[in-house]
Length: 115
Image (spheres, one colour):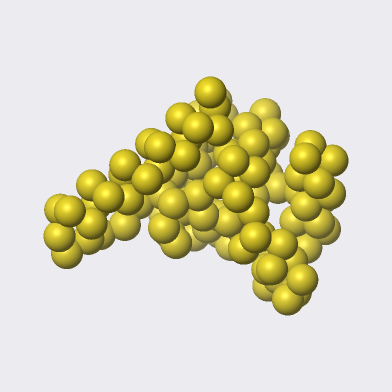
């Protein structure tokens, strides 16, 4: 699995910030939550460079859209300063039950993958 993840991350690096090919998008779409978490862990030391997609203009931080979303479809990478980089996913929900369900799903697969 580590070899597969390395190949995928290399492919993401080579793809740069442009749009994905059909094959690259299919590879990302087929990643399991555990593979995505392992990709995040592997990319942390490089400030998530391989996962940065499109730069987003913000006032207080350097921010990029993420090449894949761990939860939902609006994850971002933000560099707050030289030492602090975050990968975060957020969304707005009409109902509290939707938000709680997504949160619980994320908690469950994160626990399963990191156990």
